Length: 303
Image (cartoon, rainbow, N blue to C red; front, side, top):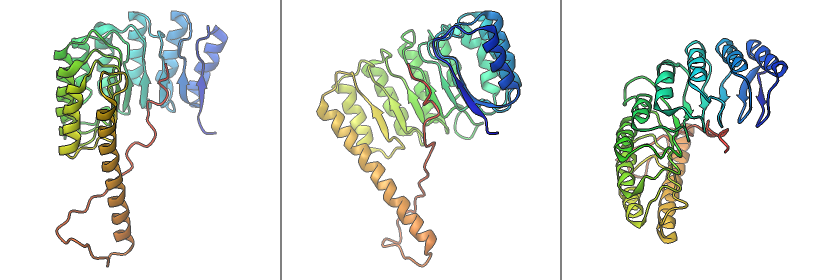
């Protein structure tokens, strides 16, 4: 039987329900476990963590909205992650981790062999926490790291912390999706991020919704999209003080880039089917375009 999913939201879980969830985890019959906003005792949370540690099928674990509510639970989750080898996506949005809690989780996160998507939105992080996150985005040529990262609504991070993240993103060979929405970034940080996007060969989606940007930073982003070839395909700028005209210009340029890549992909496919097709420009470079991640691994992170 193929692994299925257990998705429960906002309920108070009984010991019997916890027992059934743990049995399913141990039987490797669960691929997605989502307990968003549920109420459960510390003892039952420990039982869930032991089940997570034993599971070989669990790929997505959603503990959004306050499930990991104290340091004791953070430690239990960290121990589970040290043993688990299957989780690809971990959602902790809305957990009061703070930098201290993330420091406890970080050793397990950094050595996990499968983790590629992490949601730390609204986790009360500061600059120290961001420094730890940067370690999960190893530089080009190093070990594999995160492909999707959400850091929404962490207002305690300063421009220094975001600058450190921008450097890590610029040099990461893995990250494709970066969600920074509802942080007070401002134009200064947006300028740093523009440089990071121009340097990155992998970043496809950048969410800057509600981050205090103005036309000044939008013009910088427009210049970046217009003059530098990047992997970026989606740039979200809603709920900022940016004119609709500038937003439309950026959107149009990103769309043009995507269409050009699709055309190049069709040309490559045609050449593979018929190797005798000659290129109209012998000096032009052949570009193979892949589909990337497909559906976002962070698709489960609904508020």
